[in-house]
Image 1 (cartoon, rainbow, N blue to C red):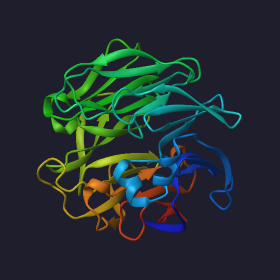
Image 2: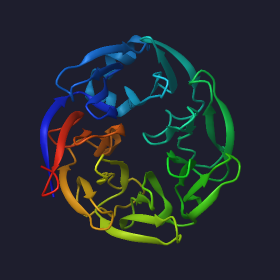
Image 3: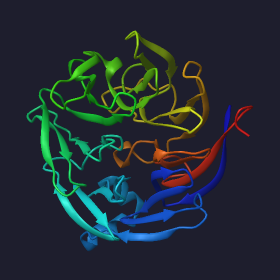
Length: 348
């Protein structure tokens, strides 16, 4: 199995995918393409202080200050929600309004928020919280992103990594970190009682999950130890490590044919020392969930890690036969939208 790059578009970040319909951003402007990235139309430019827009146009400054749109979702109602500048922007009829301002941190990680089948939206707080001085809240909106309330607070953790909806059990899943005792993967069907499939060690420190009918998959996010792609068997509760990978796993997605995709991140010595095999961000893929292949990788660029980790972002939503991703802080291909497809006997 391999990966064929079909198109590269500089200075564009992928956010949302519905097969050939893709939603992207550049700086603080949202774009949409209905033909797989051949043509784009401007949807809206978020209103932010002018210096943010100016600074966001300089890639190194934008990297250092984490400027631009962090993530974006298209709700079932057609409403767009975007996270930028510590704020939730709600967009209807190409008009944006701020409906929430985060007290701490810049907002959730890319897979740190979700929508359930009834249109409720959940957001997990993500901020440094190095002294564990604050509870970390799970927020909910049941009115299309207009208002938000706290529905649960996690005590004695650093932050929430992922918040995802499981379409097979209709449960909300949450991943927490970072120390051994803080790391866990939990699910709830009532927003009050949380069941851990595993906790208390780094095997359950994860940034994203993939759901299938029989399994829940994740990659470990451990800068200082060996990382793995793992899975939980729903029926038996069995947990197994599937393959050792070459760095912390951050983001993931699944193609319409069921191919599972995870990406490793180059973090360097982010926690004192590094267990990375190399200084490359890799994409790992599996057609059957058991056998995994490293299909492509890129080297971290020369700039310090303070200016961003070398990582790969995937469009959330429903991928068709193409895989849409954005490379960040990688050599010769920083902040580029890539359209590609898997190569092999089952991918023509």
